[in-house]
Length: 582
Image (cartoon, rainbow, N blue to C red; front, side):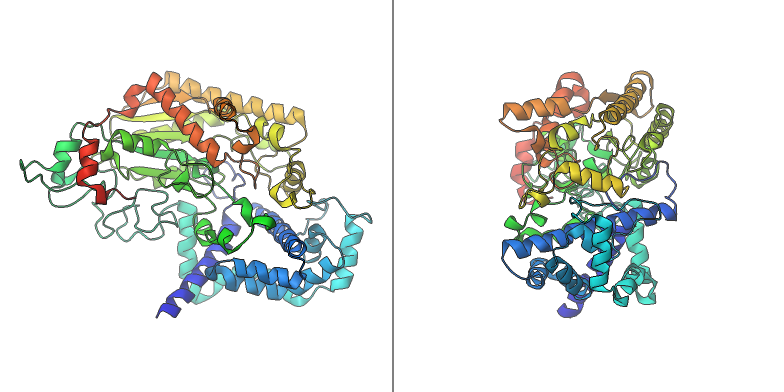
């Protein structure tokens, strides 16, 4: 029985990985709430396949170098590092590609040449040959032709490219459809009562939303007002229920009545979801089985770490830095807010496609507590991977329309007394200015890959997270920041002039400058505020510092948003200390 369950888990992880690679990435999605055309998805998938191949081949080559081993031994070492749930997938790939990779690396072919030869990097007609490393002396095209002659590409490689069609098998079709539904709609995979909350951590479970405390009852979930003061059971999952035997008053009534209980909801993008690829996955000098222990969890959370994020984080960070979040501060201010969080973010989220994502919000105007909603699409309205990037940016007119539609939807769903904070776009010139000439984790062993090279490689493949900012073209960087400022001004004007029935509305600039200044005072360097592998997202340190800055602004300028400090917090913790886990 245990072996059967393990086999099912292995298969599930592989299916999830394949579908995630095809359907979700940190690259911005098309604007609007319609699904992208198949041709675009095909291009994105092809580009990410090329990136994945070059990264993996580079790691194998460096493992062989670092451990002074054969390429075959390095491939086996890498597969042994990977957790058991994904090892089978790794060994299948190693069996198919390993001999060819070894043969070409032994002939001193670099990762670019290897991946083009394997047809995992395959440009469209008329498109350039993209490369991460400097081209060989004979030229990239010549080296690829030579590699193909050496390898004599076998049929098994061509047939494997269709492996992602595994979902066509009848026995797997239903599982695949459910996985696709989760990826598309951002709702928990495991939610037996359909209340949009789960007892499972990943797959859009309680890493993203407060943990359900009864997944067989749709009227029990985090954030609702207590049912009959929770005399008999915990209807809102904050761990406070029952009656005080000393006076017969329900604990919920005694400790939470009039306490301004409220939840926190994030509507955001990959920065809000906290996209992160651990650098030890690509740094062979630090690599071990321990480095990859969190790989299945990371894949089933879409390479996001919302449990450590700036707005909804609730667990101690295991990816560097520390966790400090708006949710944790609201919980410390009022213990009755326990578990009332929702991170409704997606990789590639923008003001346009957020109009679809927002429908996964779980809030009942009649039954639930108010909420603080953070609207924070900080980059993807100006970020895309297109060569004509300026033409694909959101215009101020589109931004106004998208945000107003979202706000009207919120007004129809949020309980009265809620608050909405619109966050301005970031000035992404900070990225190039602080990273372009530094070595990427993949280039630290041989000092051969800078962030500038990585950005150019991604841009060539049209999978750059932001062609407008991750470019040596200073004029384009400035134009991108100019558009970002225009869109921020739209948000600022909405907050100044618009009124809604069920919430008040505020605006704040994205606090990048203040975060950098604070980090400098602590002795840090600006580049440490950026994710080291993708060179684009805020790091764990930046997220934690951003929370502190946002909180201080709210305390001084909008104290009504944060609610009162609950004088009974210590008593609640003393009585319900065993009910306070997340």
